[in-house]
Amino acid sequence: MKFLVSLPHKDNEFQIQQTEAARVAARLLGVEVEILYAENNPVLQIQQILRAVRADSPPSGLVVEPIATQALETVLRKAAAADIGAAVLNGTVGYVEALRAEFPHVGLFRVASDQVEIGRLQGLQVRALLPRGGTLLYLHGPHASTAAQERFRGLEEVLASGPVMRLIVLDGHWSGESAERAVAHWLRLRSSAATRLDLVAAQDDAMAAGARRALRAAVPCLGLGGVPDVGQRMVNEGALAATVIVPSNTGVAIEHLARWLRRGVVPASIVLPVRSYPAEPDALGRVRRTA
Image (cartoon, rainbow, N blue to C red; front, side, top):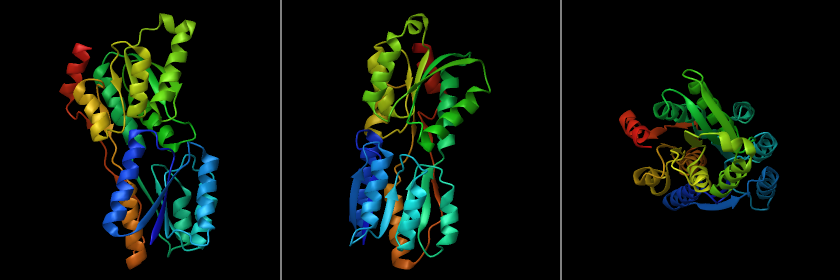
């Protein structure tokens, strides 16, 4: 039993956690796992998966965290036609249900946290820190990513329900370096000189850290991901005001694919819970009063 795990890249703390969770699950279940990274390139990711599916010894199942979901349907259909199951991670992929109906005996399912809810939680953190409104610098992930789109939508829902918030959106690519470059470029613009930032929020902890390095100023920062030795540690040390804990899901995906292959149980889609860190509103209030 062999699984292919396709991840967008290997350069941030969440993907490192995804990698380790996949390896731990493989060891516990007694299966093989091959992990490929697509360098944030959706074309490369599809090519890597297709090459594996067409190989003389293809994997028993795919675990895919898609960079862009549009091209993945064709690949998953080819895999299902060859009785290769697939778990799609961290993205809303409407065609999974259609493929499940087309190939009812094949293990096709999603494993994800509610990305809109993740955005809402971060929006609530923003409101706790800026109860009367203010200026928010926001680091957005790749726009082709449904997770990035949905996190932003959840944030906007919460921000629309309170005092006016000026929102400055910059593009990042799930890395501290990309966020640092984006913020440094923004700081060089003439318009930024007259802007007083009240808060920075990023769609992952690495981008929050990169933005913080570029600003070199005492502006509270919010992250996402909450890996214990990265995001949570940064909150505990005061480098971040808060984060949202998003659990790893590669291990869960491998476990359910293995169960399907061994017992014939086709998994349903799985939603993993998320939570704010710190969880107490008072903790965020203390950050606001001391920032």
